[in-house]
Length: 110
Image 1: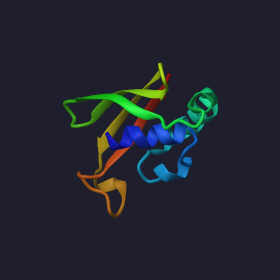
Image 2: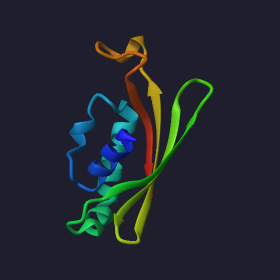
Image 3: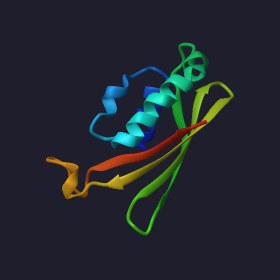
């Protein structure tokens, strides 16, 4: 899943957090800042290797949101977990948004 890969890039320091601007709601964006600081060990684990999304699964809620879990590989035999919630855009999402544009409303990493 595209969004899981972008989260992994941000948490491993390969992309700046601002690359997700507009795709993450305010509360989740603040949580990403906290996770970025707290997951410094992820950046050390990578050691020049390219981290990747190993497995990604999602569950569609009754309201149409996606709750996603992903297993990511940081290094050989070093795996971590991501979880996030994507909600479809609405009229309040702003110009250029709509039902086809998803926004992250919650995120966690272990």
